[in-house]
Image (tube, rainbow, N blue to C red):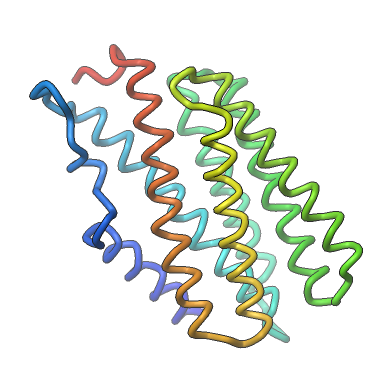
Length: 216
């Protein structure tokens, strides 16, 4: 477990320099515009929260699929707290109610994922199919919420990004259950790269929607 956590932290650091992954502080801006410190801080903190989302989801899969793992409850609590952190991160621009709504949607995402892990372990295909439908419905709800809150975010674009995230979590789980560690490493690497892109898509749209809040 500790090894996976260390590996995840190493991945976070290395992905900032990986080909095709542009750090938030190095994103190209046109018209020779300067990037404010508040913009850099928001985008990088938002990215960190979503990286944590993938990291702790993967750690939970490890705990939930390892016989005799004693940290499953603690890891789940940390993972759920991450959803609160993401919701809290948008409160300064969207308000308390919107932040709480996003937290509730993301916690639903995690609860369903936990049930999916258990159904997959049990080999309950009927339950798994039912949960997958609920999982994708929840992704639709998250996309609808974000696109309604921000006109710079398109519903279909968000659904595509969220669906891909779900698929990568499913790949992580499948590889873990099969004990295919090479495939699991690939799924975690890909999941990290994708979540950074998704995070940057959302944070860039927030800055564009509220330029006056990110002047300094």
